[in-house]
Amino acid sequence: MFKIAIVSAAGGVGRSTLTASLAILLAQREIAVLALDFDPQNLLSTLFGSGEASLGGLLPDFLTKKEFGKSALVNSNGVACLPFGRANETSLVTFEQHLRAEPEWLSKCIAQIDYPSEAFLLIDTSRLPSLYARQAIVAADLVLAVLAPDARSLALLPAVEATLSRCAPGSQLIYVVNGLDSTRTLQNDLLARFRSTLQMRLSPYPVHRDEAIPRAVANRTNLQSLSPDSLVAHDLNGLLNWLLAGPASSLDGKV
Image (cartoon, rainbow, N blue to C red; front, side, top):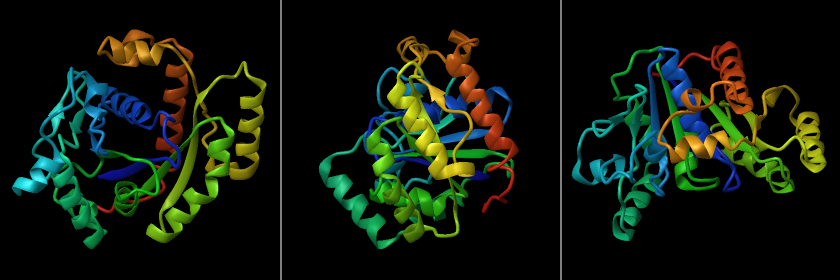
């Protein structure tokens, strides 16, 4: 199984939406995929058509000692999603204490999942430098860092690099700009700065801002069905093709 941790140093950059979109595209290409919600907000399953956040998931399974991955849900697109699950403050404290004591907990749990070697695991996390993001980075073969086309994401680049060097110095880190409005000069200028700074580590396919995405979420459908000819659908397919042809093909999965 090839594991991709999808991270960011800033909130509100569309990390979860990007995770869901890539998972659906993989499933449509008949590639087995599991989307793992490693964020206490527990919202990833709602992007796959669930009417509300799941009560069950990896945290309740941890607390009840249920086998990891057994609470995964499969939607109509064939995407398996393992929710984080409903959490209260006490259970979160207990869980986070365990994560601090065992930095490779997630990696060890993923190793128990019975998925084909050619499958993909996409791990959505809370923003850096959370415990959850650090565990995901340790578990991943590839780290995909999501950037907004704004000065905040540019300023936080060193924080992303520093976290990776501490948690998993041997992992590959690549970037993608998400939510680009190409009609705005400032955002185009920032995209040029990202390209100059990151060079080959930046995806050549920025994902443009498009109302097709929130419409798809509101209608509980996938973007490819709702708006297959949209600019953002083109961007996402380009990003996935780039990942499959390059970063995701150059590493051997650890599982």
